[in-house]
Length: 363
Ligand code: NAD
Image (tube, rainbow, N blue to C red):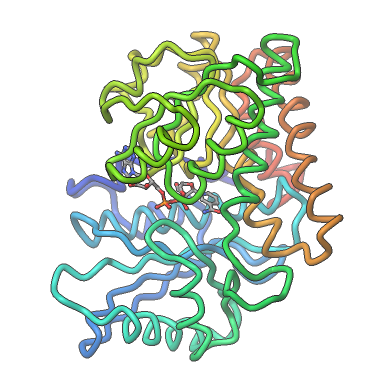
């Protein structure tokens, strides 16, 4: 069997007309892809269902501007595949899916937009369950819930309700601790310098936790207010969007959008560890090899940021915290195997996920 290769993200920002889209989706291991246009609300949305072998496809809904439909489609395809791998590695009963809403360029009514998107999700009859992602929040999920049963991260009081970001950030913190333990043979983060790219929902919660643990923070964000909040509350140093790559740090934590580690930026990195929440931060799988060969420890995105998915699926609070804490040991085992096999942690994680999804013989 031809195994899909996970990654990633030049495509999300690309307007180039490259390979056939059916071939690309097929190469990623799909699956089905659904489009919706609603003229009344300006909804243009895509839902990608990658794999339902382990359960219904669960994934966030992004609402961001895209330079082209192709860019939106490639983004949702890769993100949905990542969700399959995330659930597989975390041992969760969930398939992989994702949704994107192309944020309308004209004036629009957000409630009507998310009601129409809720109708779209409902039409799929439970094959896809939506949650929050970049550009969407709990309030949007509440609006969707008027129209569909298949939505999570609402403000409902159930354990699976609410914003998953703080739990995602907790998992990232455990991942950073695992990486620091592996690389520096110490488990505390006191005095460790972390450069956080993007201090939105997850980045801010991560900054708060790291500050409490005594880490020194440098941050950047395209939203001036978000950056200043971290400077005021945690004494974080603010740098420009470009400078964040070159800041000498112990850990670089991408917590914004994908594809940020690419041919242009990878050689600028002045860090020993890359560990953050961003989905698909590497532009291509080969960038994982470049990091590995440079001695920069990379915590695979879909392993370290699985806390949010865990929150949606694990109802019991004690079991949830135990599961999230397990991210530490999963990563430590990956790093150890990576060293002994001289293989990048991302390649190893991909193999593990593919073994769960397609059987051990497929790897
Ligand atoms: P968010 O939209 O709340 O935050 C992203 C932040 O990045 C915003 O403050 C934004 O202004 C900033 N930003 C945008 N472009 C930037 C740039 N070029 N440089 C610096 N900052 C920039 O999103 P979030 O929910 O915090 O998610 C962040 C990342 O983590 C995304 O890739 C998301 O897919 C991933 N993720 C989130 C969760 C979750 O629970 N929210 C779970 C898993 C993965």
